[in-house]
Length: 226
Image 1: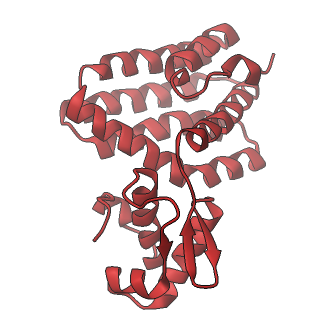
Image 2: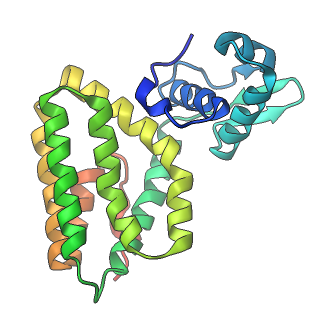
């Protein structure tokens, strides 16, 4: 059994990374229940591999704080609303700090790349491609992170990326299946984000954060860097 992780996303990954990606998606979407015990033998048999890449996968999932390694295997940790909120809290802090680093920069290329990613998101919706939408949505926000020229910030973002990608993928699959009209709102929200960067306007960016994250992050104003 796998957990519907996009096949094309596995390209370039090691066997251990691929197993971790599938298990991560299973934990995030609730197919693998909290308190479940995963063993090396069980997962090796499931993915038809040796125990070595499973060990590598467990290390990655432990880094993501999705499992806790025990003597008998790996215990799945809770990943519910509180954990999601904390993840988005950290994401908001990173993005607001990255925005503050844009002051004085020529933002022409940054805005152009964000607009490009938004257009690709719109194309993905037309073709009902949740996987492509997820990738471009993440790349849209990553433009800001890369433009910060802050190595530790990039490192923290990279650390969050695997779980965030799983969360976004699950959300976009659900929207495309049950609420496709919501993508007009999502596109508008991202355009507000672009406007904020183009004008370097903190108030507009705060609005963009509220539009994008109010459903998961209730303390947005508290993270804002004046």
